[in-house]
Amino acid sequence: MNPRVERLRALLEEPLLVTDAVNVRYLTGFRSSNAALLVEPERVRLFSDFRYAAVARALAGVEFEQTARSLLGDLAGRLTGRIAFEPEALRYAGYTTLTAGGLELVARSGLVEGLRAVKEPEELALVRRSAGVTDRVFERIAEERFTGQSERALAWRMEQLFHEEGAEGPSFPAIVGAGPTGALPHSVPGDRLVEAGETVVIDAGCVVEGYSSDCTRTFAAGSL
Image 1 (tube, rainbow, N blue to C red):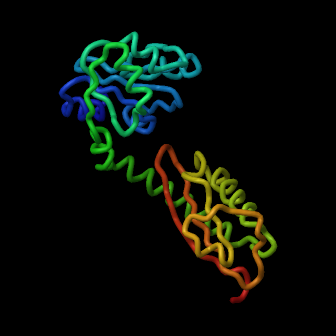
Image 2 (cartoon, rainbow, N blue to C red; image 1 turned 180 degrees about the vertical axis):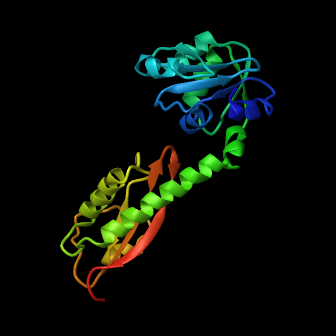
Image 3 (cartoon, rainbow, N blue to C red; image 1 turned 90 degrees about the horizontal axis):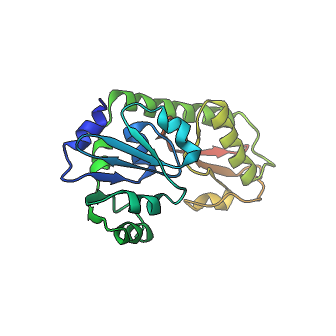
């Protein structure tokens, strides 16, 4: 029995079609760019295409049904009746595809997100691990030479260090701003070279088993 699914099921008035990839992963551990989960009173069905079939079939607690690459088009012909959906995740084109197949869709906002907001001890440990990796990466980059490096090169280096420290990858593209660029909160790293005596602002974070960190620090390239 999956306790997360059971907590969700207790909130439902009708079966819920979960299409947000983060929510699918939270409920099942399944990672896919093309998947949906239907939480019903007596079962949980996972839908995805052939690329993910081997992994999906090995999951405990779900019934896997292989679909076409056109996932929602396939579900429109496969599902019937009244079904809740995640309005923040399902685009209008997907909504019309499902309703054209005869489904009665009911918007239910924030059901899985409400569960995710209360972290389990294991989740808190993963958040701490993610933050710890980010701390170590910032410590490592601080030991390297900034002067003469481009903002883009420093951003690439941050992402390389995240992988070296065991993260899945960055939680977002690293932001690096040198000199006047550092005054822009969400600047895009460019080819500008860091000059001696400038400050360098780095905003970066990583993902560890689905849990993200985010940290911003300012460095000095030599004496200010």
